[in-house]
Amino acid sequence: MQKTAKLNAHRGPVRWGILGTGWVAGEFAKGLRYVSHAQLTAVGSRSQEKAAKFAGAYHVPHAHGSYEALVGDSDVDVVYIATPHSRHKTDCLMAFAAGKAVLCEKPFAVNAGEAEQVINAARSQGVFCMEAMWMRFMPAIRKAHEIVRSGAIGQVRMLTADFGVPTVFDPANRAFNAALGGGALLDRGVYPLSLAFELFGAPTAVQSSVHMTQTGVDEHTSVLLQYAHGQIASISATLTGYASNEAVIIGTEGRLTIHEPFCRPDRITLRKAPHFAGGGTGHDSLKQRVKSSLKNSAVVRRVHGWLPGRSGSLNVPYEGNGYNHEAAEVGRCLAAGQTESSLMPLNETLEIMRTLDLIRAHWHKN
Image (cartoon, rainbow, N blue to C red; front, top):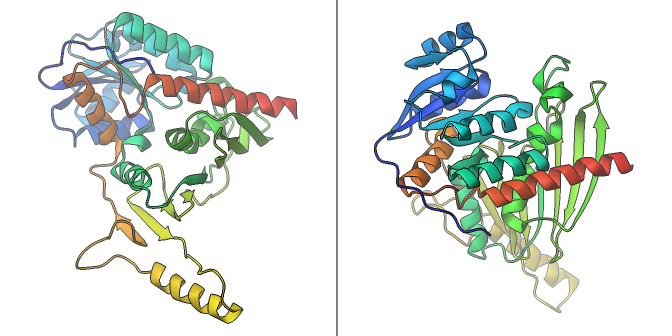
């Protein structure tokens, strides 16, 4: 992996500008309230009216009626790009040209070619850039990876994860609009895919099934990923169905469940695998299984808390609305003079986009 370059460390509060005024832009604005040393100073829209309305709702000092004016604002250090997927490349490059650091909403671009252009531009101009995969920075996700690394579930062999909430079909809705980068895979499937990457890295083989809508985007997508050391990840996404919205990491010694919604979880459950004694009668084996099952179904100890390495659930609360954790990571990186985050490195963002391309290419082969 490419070494992270160093910038002069950022001093003082990080001044944020938000590009876009949609729902996710508002959620990010709310999250910034929980980040120390962060100031929301400006918002940019394609209309002055929308920018002013957003600024009034979230107490933003500067409202700009164009994206160009937002990135040119001298009071902005970092631009949060909350525009439709189809604009991400253009808006990132525009922000870099103005010397701004960037936090770009997921998916980072609509294909790997665009992602590579953005990453190359950020690196050549020496500015900070990170994909806004907010799930990565949630405390419960970090705790889940800590548990996995500890060996509590043995060797990780499989991941199952799905993401879907019913969305009423509307051709004008961004999620159903092919021109805006819509579809279940880009909008929702990128979450379980990112989790699979953090566990296993890039897959060696991809299989996929899909159902397309009349507007030319995928309504449901199911993907099977295979890896060099035999692991498998089974992930799915839907625009119109209600999925479990959980992720289950399966190991040789147990399993770890990241509960709904796994993109913003506050609870995880470890279940240790029962171990069966060899030999003995069938009756003895049954008794052993029952005993082991009862032992392993123990829940959180109310006095002593959750015991690492034992079965049970753990509450891992997050601050604010969750978006603040990714913003805090940007601030940490800038204070350290880093141009990339070690938790969401650009090389991995690019590999994820390449895998998304492979999945979509597989649709057209079938």
